[in-house]
Length: 359
Image 1 (tube, rainbow, N blue to C red):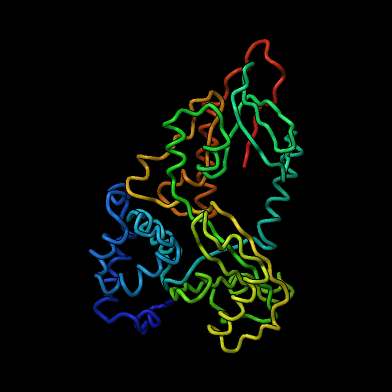
Image 2 (cartoon, helix red, strand yellow; image 1 turned 30 degrees about the vertical axis):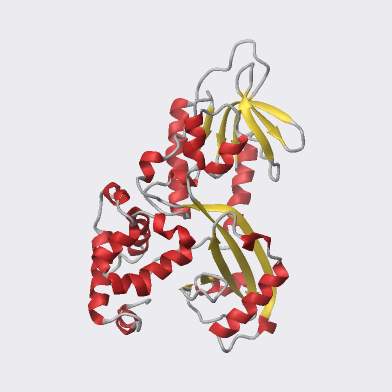
């Protein structure tokens, strides 16, 4: 449904339901105060506005594809954030999408960022797993790495998923640990395919057929100029699942076999020989679900341990996980850290490094 014509021809729902669907989207786009939406489930709110038939044919399958069985836990604020974001991308006279991308990918940004940090005297360590975080008896925050090395910092910011932070931080109060642990996350198993030619030329295709082993087809080469891929097509096939889903243990070869069968079913012209590369990324904690009364139950950024903050995707309370929201969170959190994080080092303590950011 990329334009009005496709919307009107969309076969699963009738004209009355389409009018109600349009009214739902328009109403959501005009809501400024989202907090009251946290008190009602997404399904109940959508049913009230779009009607049961539209929910059964459209909204529920989409929510289930994104959130699995946890779709019933999502509040109306979750679907509002998605609608508001997509509607904002169409605020032009012709209602056409306005999306942008970084030429060459975000790797270019990260490489440049690392260089700027290095020039500013910041030490950046990557691929170093943290095993525990605790308050140092002499002051500061002691971070122990999986390699057995321990370093003490004046302050530390943890950006891991809340349940992960709850497990590795020693000294949290029981209420803090409980607040972190009860944030419900979705994980993702995402395959990346480099193809000789595009599949269909649509940027995003949402899939509601449970027989398909992935929940969407993201053709990046429909948005990004294909010259960045040497004329090839780049496609992502994500599957959103719970952090303990068995899919995380399925081998790449098995996934490739399943996905090729599904792609041939969806795209009759697809040729498996067009697949030049197949890679799989698995992340157990990606998307925090905005459950009922989510903002009131959110773990605080500043912990009870002096000098330690936990700031992550769980703190995006009025949006969905995307680059814009992440940068907005980083900017607001940085301002807060600069205001609150200037405590002097403990007198007589061992030398410490000013700040650690653990992700």
